[in-house]
Length: 486
Image (cartoon, rainbow, N blue to C red; front, side, top):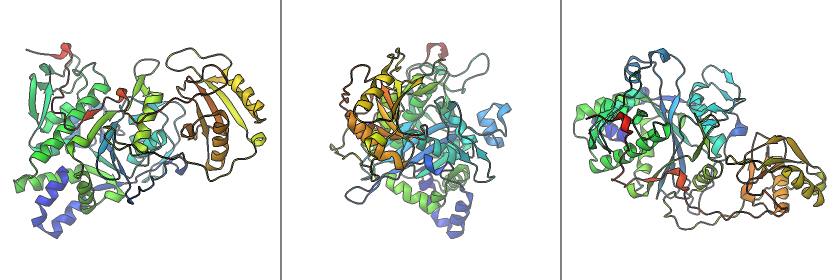
């Protein structure tokens, strides 16, 4: 939106300048992961409209003098950048609402195989859990997109990536964004850590370098975690949108040209957004959403075993991703939508020919696994005619909800047949490249008995997503008492 204002303000400079701005914009491949890991495009609604999903990436690259000065950490100069900010922006098909889901940079997950579009270098899929921000260094933003699609099964249409200096230039052009803290804050430690943010208690209009400090602050906000930083970023973005809509025009032509020049140089987008005209078209779609229908959320998470990183919270994260995938507004103001379960077009084999591996996933939420559940349910399947069902006793998993996984489209019908035989909803049948055949994981919701009772789901945004409405003007960051000053 900021970029659009700048471009429109410089339109009088003529066609050559417009072409010059186009040349500034850097482009990269949208998705450089394997086709098998990609999510299907959503179907159009009754009016022929489709949602738009845009991945916003904040790079911590320090490969220019400006970014090095702003970002510090000289030891990382000219090293692979990391995607330290990742936000999936979902624009509803009818353009009535917008949802944003942030993923904490400390999230551990499986990064898929990616190929660098410039060098052809192949990065093998991670064999163990890796931090999500490492995806950017594995062939560029297209790998970050591939990582999101593999995790969420949400098709991503575009990405937009900006660096430190781009954030500063755009914050300057806006002329200030009001933010609030509940105490004086100074983000600085005796060992030199911290963003350097120093603000007085209450509301302050920040811009330029100070805006970047706000967006990067961890030491000083709440518990000093990346989760707190994500919350501060949501407050800033909501306030920025309100500010832009209140002050819809920027009057200084010189500042506009400077912003247009700097912002286009700082921006990297996918090939489908690689011109000023395409960015403008996108902005006109985004502007259709009223501020009160914008919802900022954070992916529900749990701490990893060592307490230093986070993992997607199984049920809540999956539910949040489903709501986005099914184009259900996170503010709860949508009319109730009913969707029929997707039925595979590939017919299932005969029951006695379907090979099923059953795993025990009852070790969830830190609880103890129920011994023998894989064997019990495997015998149940054999009794129902699935002669090739076997228990995998070598693995104990943590799965809050029972799920049937399959690796490829030719086994989808078989997986749905297994689910139907056990009374498991079709929505709990998932495609996954982590399995080699039809695999039933008995979750913590089926710890006893041989009859599965599906939990009643709803379309409410999980409380653990920490939803923040775009029209909330009272949001204020809590300051850690160790980082206050007088």
